[in-house]
Length: 66
Image (cartoon, rainbow, N blue to C red; front, side):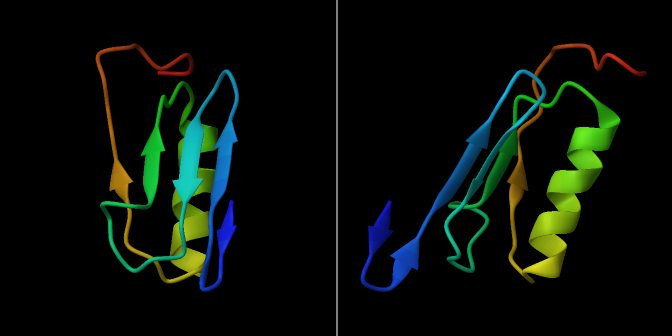
């Protein structure tokens, strides 16, 4: 989805969902549905590299590699 000044990336698979809007707000940049530590680390690194705040939604599921 692209608006004149906004492009959003949404990536979802069995291990993680990552939504990045490019807006400097943790309300609009989200990591959720995390299943493994590696996918979490990769997603965090993505937001750090882009210098964007983000929220990490954690549920009650057990991580596969913990």
